Amino acid sequence: MSFKSRLIQRLFPNDKIYTRRKSGDKCLYLTFDDGPTPQVTPRVLELLSQHDTKATFFFIGKRMENNPELVKKVKEQGHSLGNHSYYHKGFKHMPTKDQLEEILQTNELLASFEVNQQSIIFRPPHGRWRIGLLWQLLKRNIPLVLWSVDSKDYSRKNSQILCRRLSEMSLRDGDIILFHDDNELCLEILDNLIPLWKKQGFSFATL
Image (cartoon, one colour):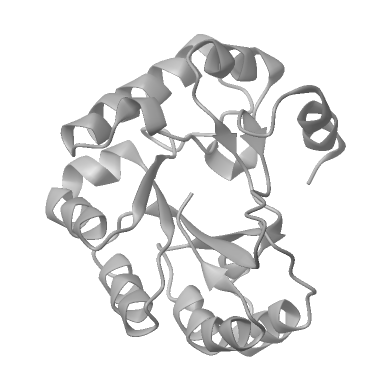
């Protein structure tokens, strides 16, 4: 987590911007960015079902429009849906008004899948955001959700290396773990680690 994110978290309530969500118990939150994709998301759902585990999917609006049945399937299986912008363009150099337009457009799309707009959470593309955007989100009561554990499945490294790295971490209650359902690396990693984390006494919940 960047210094900016740590500083802002100290200044704002934990339900407005957060990288962890403490439950008071040993609970982990699996999150998936950049879907839905017909090639990987159904396989992620199957794996989660096999392990009786729930997760949160931060979907890209345009991909939701292209795969509406898949969005419905994710929701029907009891997982949570979050906002990951409409086009997933780099927010770093985009004007705040354009960022907000993408967010609100995706919120409307999520609402069409019967997601309560009052409970929608947002994760910016690549985890990048500016103070101006945070202010706009605060005014609209849209929480900004980052992560405390990065699986690095986007790095395309060997899955065994990534799995070993995660298995050696000391996870804590409330850790939010970042994965992506637009590539297959998450599948082998989670198939090995979900049983391990459960053996360590962790449960899983949606954000």
